[in-house]
Length: 103
Ligand SMILES: [Zn+2]
Image 1 (spheres, rainbow, N blue to C red):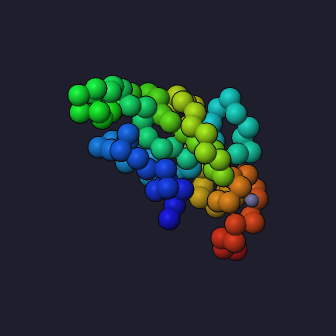
Image 2 (cartoon, rainbow, N blue to C red):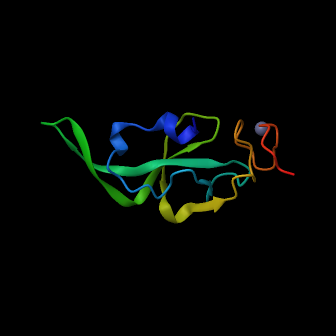
């Protein structure tokens, strides 16, 4: 199960899958840490149906790999990185201790 799937929730239902299985560095934070994106920031909350609806297309909820805090980040601040450029366990760019084959 990928980190993305772990954090999937109904809040991000019906959103485009622009960020699935991708990882990023985020401007304004260390370039040594990888992030994944949970989805666009939900635009509204329907109190009757108790669901989020729509989304902001310029802001996302992003989480550092290996962490669980959710940050709101501008889409423009995301830079996609190679899947082998970072550690899928601790999220550090350049760490290879997750056991993935980088040969
Ligand atoms: Zn690591």
